Length: 254
Length: 254
Image (cartoon, each protein chain N blue to C red):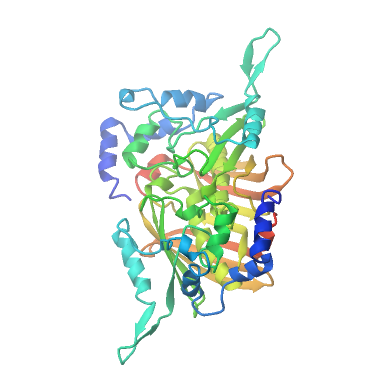
């Protein structure tokens, strides 16, 4: 890792120090860091070379009625209409989603392309809409809660007709990892403990809700439950520990 | 689930009872159940309609030197040469791998196609060799150990340049789930607890080794550690609980 990243690190030295790149990756302190950052990603001297990335968190034709119902439920709370007809931000905010990890950070997309040009975010690596993970995340800063709405495609099979345990773990890691990142900046999963209560049939839509339990220094403890879209069936409950990192740690080898 | 499977269950009644199908899915009692079953899968009245499935556990051009070295290390122990030049089975056996869950069972591929024609095993759902999970599993019945050799492709990214925590969980679930299935027949993951010790760089080959801790009625406890290919770096250690099931439970809705 350290060896293979040598040329990349030299390239970083030409465009700026690792610490300055790391600071770009920390979430901004504004209430809605993601909206700001997703625009910022396209700014800079090289923006003309890249087309605007697709935001995968927006509805597409593969989304079923349950997925759309839950999307509308949360999306309608992202903006509130006031008495005079004016609009203001609501309690929830939709988090845009791209097919690279460093999706929200100014310059992040360039950094990610440099590390491995062909790399793609695991959950967004399939071009066929509806085939794997269709999902959208919302965040409520007042309640410090994150929800993920996932529709499980036919390429996620584990037990016959049902979603693979690893795909379920991936959904959970996505929601709680995002939540921990909002709380602490860049993090790595240190522990993930999942109780699988009820298998998820392929094609179903599930709702994941995460809560931040506590922060202790560099540690963040998060819990998450996954239910059916209507909340009537508990599929999994889980706990996780994340540790905040400097991205330079990853870049320099680990 | 129960509603949508109604027509399928009626179809099963025409071709045989659920209990008989379930019994087909139980692992045979021979020492090498998988080899026997993988041939059996092509037998039966409808075999002429299906081409022979690809065994994904065999080397392909995307496998790097470390992946090949580990493959040869275990594969060379699948057969032993005796004094007279004759060959006999060795302590390890390679487990074939297809892109449907019911890959080893006689008739299983037909059942799986009926449940969801387009469904594919999560870990084998990408046609581009080397892009996602390249892996092979070996089992040692004398020591009751299972190993998985995984090469992580560029479409598994989580943290920049590294494998997604969910993809790592998927690798672990694959190895320990297979091990538990060999021990008890069809199982579902009930708990998965992973300590992530060191991130896995994209493109690296890792070695997973699982051990069966104990069986208590329908419960199977398994542990697993993931190391770098040469064993010098510990990436994860994990424990898991599996519960044996009847496949009819899944088919009838859960």
